[in-house]
Every structure is written in structure tokens, then in C-alpha cells.
Length: 382
Image (cartoon, rainbow, N blue to C red; front, side, top):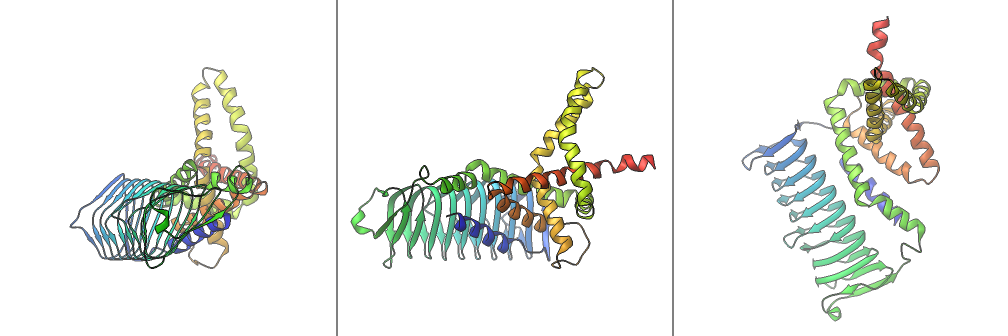
């Protein structure tokens, strides 16, 4: 199960983390794409709210808090958001990462969904293979290729023309039609609840340990596919996008400082993580130092809120500096930072060593950002 989840992440990011070539890139607070808008090149949109009803001749990537898609895309569609609603038609593959998603579109390629809660409506169609991971999954519509689902709870409905593979804690099979001798193979602690006529379905049950009995499986699933973990993942992606596109110079200085002076940033980070809380409390004792103490406290809390984004950018900076994938010396871009987030996600899975590594990376990230913010003060002294 754990290997399958990690494999899905790798497939997702390898397929998504491509360099920006000729493309339309839009960053705004709210984006509304009209039905008569036509894009002839790749489209990358980042906004808090996105409503895309346009036509795109190539790939489309949407990153936002709330994303609604009901347009037409001749290439691939990638969506990252907290609340996602996808309909419309896509000629290529569809990749969705969301805390909560509703899908009722038409995909002529493969689909890869990673969601805390996913609902596929009756209008949904998938021409090729489906790979779905999540907490609570409800399928619906028409599936013509292989379908694989790994989730906590699965409610299966729809028409399937090829085999279905399920791994879940709880499986409910509703109104299902199996065509072309298709079968449903499911792994679960108990047999599925079948609401229709089971004699008309070819069901293969493989009993597995329950989460309570299998500690590794329980920890893996609860840690990885929980609603809040996916929400944090999506939020981190959005923060990374804002940093790498809205604050390029600052991000460049931040990444270069950590990669050129790793020991120094670690020392500064260690001082930061332990000294700021003490200094903040001492300042708030006096009336004069109270505002400064509050500001320091908020700054300290803010660092922890965005630390996964900072660490991802840090890892991306190291990858760009010490690999030959990209010979440019410019700022680390969104895709390198995204690859850094993927690696960070994998590191966090390691029980003890992973936590130690994340803590060391946190020190480096805090040290680098404090050192960059202190640069104006150092220049004044000179």
C-alpha cells in the first residue's frame, strides 16, 4: 500500500514537473476565463479563485484555493486546489490534487486523482486508465480502462469496461455494471456491502488486516491521505507558487545563501529557533518592548506556518545548484521547488531519521531567511 502511494506521487510529479516553455502564465487574486477565450499555448494560472471556462489548445495547469473548470483542453489538465470542481472536456490526461474534489468531466486520456474526498458524478467519463487515491471516494460514470483505487472508504458506482482493483478499509458496491467480463478485485478487512444484485457481478475478495491490527498500514494511510495532510500539501504548493513567481529576487537570495553557506545558515537557524521565543518573552515584559516582542512572536509563528514551503524551495535550490539538469544560474523556479516538496514528503515518511532530517532542514531554512532579511541592516553598518 505504501509503495503504491509513493509510486503515484512519483508518477504525478514526473509527469507534471516540466519546464515552462512557450506559455501564458497568470498570477492574480481571482481569475475568470470566458467561454470565448482561446489559448494557443500552454496555460499556467495561479489565483485564490479560478473559474476556467475557456478553450486551450495545449496543456493547462491551475493552482488555487477554489478551482472550477468547465472548459475544453486539447492537451493535459493539472489542477491543485482546496476545493476543486472539474467538468468540461479534456483530450489528454487529467491530474488533480485536492482536499475535496467533484468530477463530472470527459477525459479521453488517463486520470490521476489524489484527494481527501472525491465524488465522481454520473456524467463522468474516462476513456483510458484511472488511478485514484484518497480518504473517501465515490465513483460514478463510465470507465473504459483499468481502474485502481486506494482509499479509506470507497463507494463504487458506475459502468466499468475493464477490471477494477480496490484497496480500502470499507467497501460499498452500489449500482455497478461490469462489461466485457470485467471483474472487481478488492482488498479489505471485511467483505463489501453489496447494495445491488451480487449474482450479476464478478467480485473477488482478498481479506487484509484492519488498520487497528496493522500499525504500519494505519500510520501510512492516516498520515498520508487524511484530509488535513492533503490540505497542508495543497496550501504548501500555493505558497511555493507565490514565492517563486511573486518574490523572485528574495527567493533567489534565500536559495543562494543556503546553498553557498550551509553551515552558517544552520548556525543562524539554531540561534533563531531557540533565541527568538526567549527574546520575545523578555521584550513583552516591558511596555516599551511589548510591540517588538509581539512582532517577533508573530514572525516566529509565521516561519513555522510556511516552513514546508521554505524547505521545499531550499531542497529545490540544492538540486538546481548541484545537478546538471539546468545550467542557468537564475532563481530556483516553481518546478524545482515542487520536486523539493515531493522529496520532503518522502523524507517525512521515515519514522525517526525523517524527523531529524526535517528538523535540520528547518534550521537551514530559518537561518537562510533570517540572514537574507538582515542584509539591509548589514549594508547600513558598512
